[in-house]
Length: 129
Figure 1 (tube, rainbow, N blue to C red):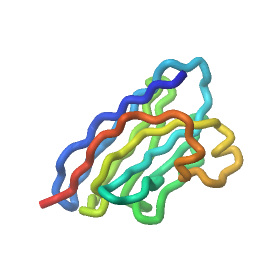
Figure 2: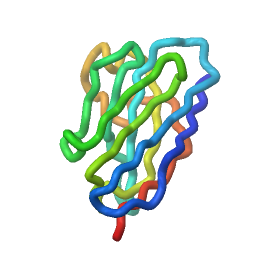
Figure 3: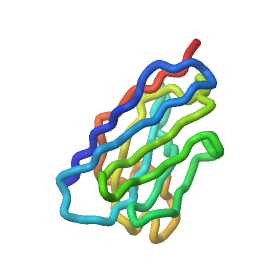
Figure 4: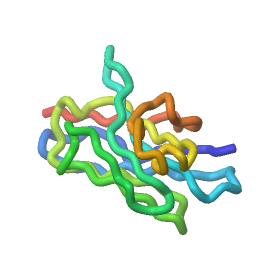
């Protein structure tokens, strides 16, 4: 029902910035919980940031707090992740995900990948000098 397409990844030097985008389509529902996840080589998929499409309720992993900003624009049906002060450990495949609005209504496990139903194919972020 929901199709998600990420873009904006690439190669960036440590300390640099990138903005990832996720375009959503194919659903008649208006309210979702949405999130960004990432996965490095040999690593578990981890939650980076999440938000309700109703607005607000942003959650961040401790490792990106203060450096990343998640946002959602209802008119464009687009999710964004503004990343700054990038570190090599931020490298990985970044995935956009969507799930039931109850994730953020409940307010727990918002960065748990098992809570989300729909996934994009990912966009690669490499932070290296």
